Length: 197
Image (cartoon, rainbow, N blue to C red; front, side):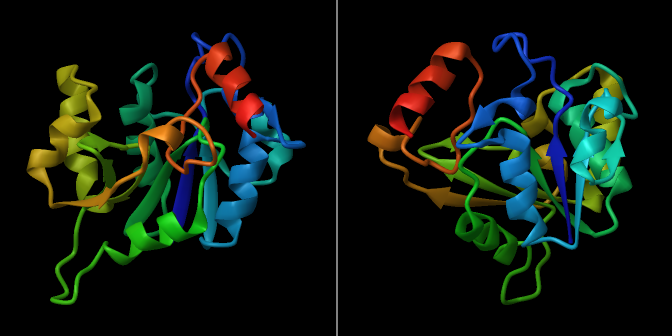
């Protein structure tokens, strides 16, 4: 199975490339690649500036549709993935956890051999679409949606088979304290993250 790390964002709120932020002695991206290589046969970076990531020793793909946000990255990742299901991960999530990924992976099929096209974590009603599994069946509806100008990821979910996996992460660790669904968007969040690490 393949994992795709989305590193094509402009990081406007952070003011610097989030994938390359140093945390606990390594960049966010290095932490993720190291963990994902232990879980997946293939790890790919989706980015619009491949030269930035040439030293990470993993394949890099450039968005098919430019400036289409994370949905464009998911689309490109699925097109280039060698597996039917692909794990999609944003580059700004420093606490990615093996157990959570494996739990989501186990729900791509159920005991009745039903296959789900999107397997996504849900915490208190909040979906995490950039820490989720997507199947090749998502390619066509995503393409149609991008070409219509709608870039909201969840808006194509009604066209595919979705499995929401509920988690209940306490509010006290919702943002920090090794929460595997934490993503870091601003300098303030990064500073707070380092305070709690």
